[in-house]
Image (cartoon, rainbow, N blue to C red; front, side, top):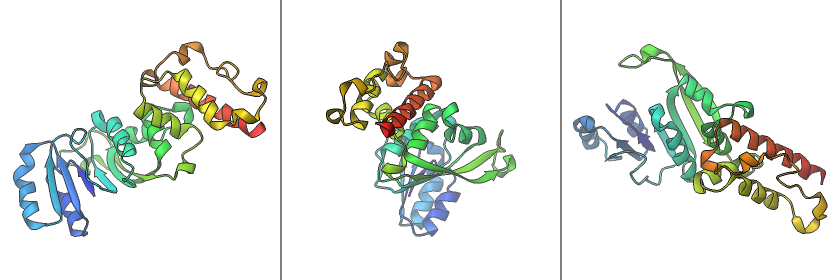
Length: 235
């Protein structure tokens, strides 16, 4: 288990007692004395100090974290890109959970990456006074479980993967590649093969790099992907 932000170590100790091999990554050196004591008590605990976005990740298959919102999107992106990780349990604000589980109509980059690679489950709601100091908003425990490739959705996984690995790819090139990969061009009359123009992709959207896509752009491309899926079924 990779635990991100162990802090005072309450969850860390519970994970260690379960028998799991635990690697805890902590950015705040104020907790070093407490975590050092835990390491003396549990041989199955290793502690790494630094930002979880910068340190090398262990060969973990599970993640437990209570991340600040400022790192939530890059953290979920990192979890998605680490293929060994099969599940993650995150304590996050209720509104951030809603963003992660947004529908196509309200698709954000974080929702795209989350839903392309993971099934999202609300495990539990947490009251404000469950935290010390008291939280300013309601929080939830969100579970992410990695999907099989075939369950990721036509095109959605590809878009999420390209945003992660080739962020500077123009959107028009992404859609052209998607057409080429989803349709056997050799077996169809070239006059019936869809193009970015025939599926209604705006030129202004096509010129944008994937990293530049806003929430509306992502929703538009998801709709284009769905229209391509319908065309493929009818060809």
